[in-house]
Length: 315
Image (cartoon, rainbow, N blue to C red):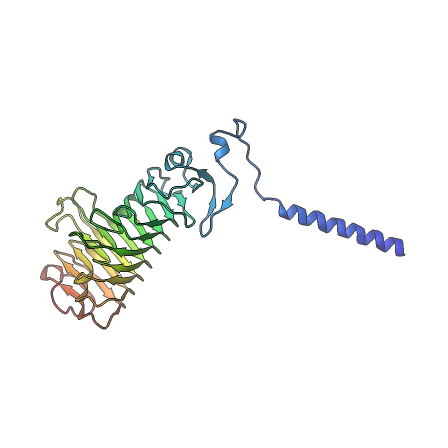
């Protein structure tokens, strides 16, 4: 019996070790390049995880290489040092399969997006040329990015133009109004750029911002090109510290804005301005610094469809 039990225990030990070794191996097949491991096929990597993002399916050293390699549904991660250059994204996916560009906290010198159906996630820009991030496209998601101290131009942190846009969980800090700038955390307008529709701006932080947290201008605000409309914005759950402007959010010729659950953490004259036919606004549930005189300023042209606290005066 002693010999039998030793044999049984030995067999069990070998089986356990074999099982552990199997579990330690990757669950995906190793991919082989058709060119011996040095060309395009070799760049389509076995999945690896970027912190806070999905698994990488493509690795690239430059934005140009990423545009060449990426296909709809891919997650692109960068191996090269992009800290001294602007990340320019020109390749998108499709409606059902966007391409994700995953930063994982890596530094870039600003971001320009000129593509549809992309997700840009987790990049950090310190003192980039303003605007720190500029996006033009449809079905674009900008999330988990940081812009600190944008410089030059008009000093803006983020500019956006297009349809079905999501700007969420980003941080913009230290915009600078010096030299006549109007350095907003976020801005859109419709002059030589397309008007914006169905825009979600949620859970962002605009900190130590000299000008407004959001300046949104439609095509008929006096400076626009008069073509189309700008409409259907949801502004929710953001924190706003605007230091020098009269209001934190300003809408001119923007219809159907829903503004709810935001924290206005600095003592502006009023929190929200609605002007030049910014009709259909809904305002509720915001938290105001004690130094803000009134929550909403509105002109007569923007009164139709307004629902919210009683306005305290003009925008």
